[in-house]
Length: 417
Image (cartoon, rainbow, N blue to C red; front, top):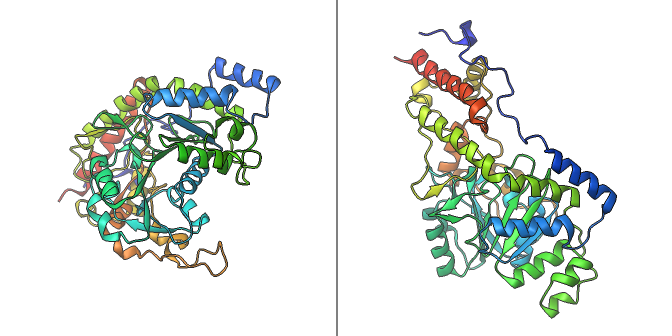
């Protein structure tokens, strides 16, 4: 047996950590604009200045296929506005993937809605169209899809199911900046789409989110949920909604101008940075294809991974003598690898908010208890997925990628026979 570093052997990876640094440093132009904004105006409550510039640029980024964009202080706030705008309320059921970041669906509970989880597809990690219809009930109102780790969902089948059953579709594109399904950008299919602009995203604001839609009614209600005064007066169109312009619906969830400036500059750099990521991650995927201890990382023929938000291969315990994931991570870390379990990708049905009939948010309010045993594919992925770095600089990162590949092949040899 080849000696692993954990047992005293030489580590396969000599490059010192951190192996992936994100977000990139600010440019002089970005810093200068932030400084100028500090002097000019730190309190923007309308769709003006850098807020408006970001929203317009984001609509252009989506190819002009949707007419409305609204910024928020987080992706979670934007999702809250999306569900509210679609009429989610007490008694309404929202279907969504069983394995994803909890905030993709948790705002439903703040509206007294019910989340019904659906298993995910083993190859794409996205919601499984084959599992959706068994969960439909007369109370189902919304179908939420998450383009998990940047891989597009099967949107033809999703939209067909939604049309046949009269469901609104929410696209959570928090991982999918620039991802395409059959050449069409994610975020342009559903009734409403939300993009997180968290610091880890390729288009980042520090924290922030942006909602896009082609529906005027969704735009108006979503605006009033998180905005009031100037923006609501200027942008809300329907007279019945517009009469609430002064107060909105009681919340302030808007983005700061400083976050908008950061996001605007990261959006301008997206094409260059995404190209670097694609080069690195595709090379990594191809080089790992021969590692017996890992399942090849699948990318569907219809999919363009955009900026590759995640790289999460599944390990094969049967090729490693039944090694547990925690022990495997110890082995790989000893080899010098930056590796973790799978955040943010928890089987939601194991979390109290999704598993218990009372969320604790409202007295005596009951919701659906999702059973962890009902999602075998999601459970298997959670058990076997590894979280590896997202390499973004081909010139600097190729050596590190090659050493990671060497480490996995070393693992194959160590456990062979």
